[in-house]
Image (cartoon, rainbow, N blue to C red; front, side):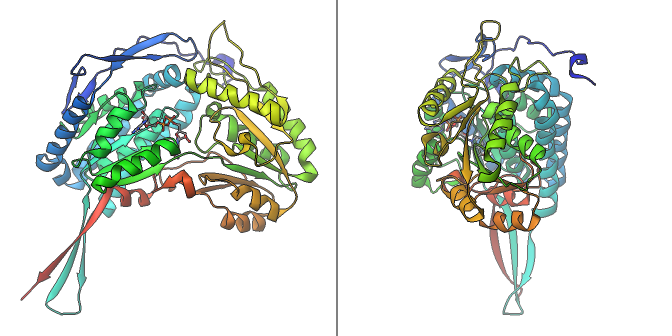
Length: 494
Ligand code: NAD
């Protein structure tokens, strides 16, 4: 169907948000609230509860009690799976509500949410429901002595605190909650304060699907206060974190006193290597969407484009032309490719990098911050040519629609530049030489390598970082390792 024929969804009133503790929606104890705003209209959307440390303690107590005395961790895997499959179905049924919330709250294009994000989110619940049924059972092993049997059990960790960022609010929550619940843990979710709206709707989905009281708790409030309460509590067994490397480092330090299990999904500055033998049209598309999807507010954005010298000038020209044609607009409009930047502070930070880029490289596209209908935190798709890999715009995570184009000489040079970063989240190689693609994939220090593509995801594909991009894996059967522990029982048969 042509895009013009699709009716655009419309903004709608969103009820005020409360905390979900022990199966009940309630206000913060002191009645405090915070505002969430729409980056397209710059108007207030609604208010949500602003929890204090006392609310966090109440959630921890409820979760702890639900784990110790409730049915969830002892339930048959099949029964837990049924509830998770129901959550998946409810997510699909409510896609329109979720997509409008994400568009209003963080500027994610409605179509991208419906086409990519929601199928992935409901897929995560289905995938982990199945995984838990297949892999949570124990094993029976023999020992050196014939009368001794060894039984191994795989058990949940207990209370999981999930702390998530504002850039893919629903997807990054589901990638934690689905494996955590499937393995029999109980959860406390702390979403980013700027983007709580889909978290509220997901918690309601959990209630409607029949997750028992206390098993799923939601606390909205300031990261420092709530995050601190979760990571320092001896009754919280694990923190599953996605966010910036600096906050991740803080959590690692604060978790030391209680020897907290932690997984860290942190920042990135991912290289996209374009060889001269690549299919130029396909490479341009991979590079364009690699950096500009979700307006560059993507941890795995291809935010350093490395181009073989012999095609550098042609690539710069054609890529910059594509960037100049990028369609900015209301994320609810089906024609929009780049919505607004999610928050005012990020918008200002990105514009600071644009100014830095103008001083240190050659601006070939974008650089502006237009208003649409007089409003909105929009930043144009911005390209800097003749950039070197050691510039700030080439090394620091801009987390917006801004990209440096860096020339390289040969394979060795490409690998050297690709790995010359403190991060190691994702990477890509565009070439028609499959041997070269696989050879280089072995040598890139990153958790994901995309060959002749970008932005491919699946619940079955492990995802996570090397180096300062973090540790632990989300998605794939491997993720269950981060939500379970093994117990060994020695039995003397006499
Ligand atoms: P952030 O680190 O500022 O915040 C993430 C979460 O941590 C939020 O919920 C925030 O409230 C909370 N928080 C803040 N201070 C805290 C503290 N002292 N203790 C505990 N929690 C605290 O990150 P952000 O700006 O929301 O998100 C952008 C960052 O997330 C980028 O660096 C991006 O690369 C990263 N990210 C990584 C991945 C990945 O999978 N590796 C995915 C998406 C985003």
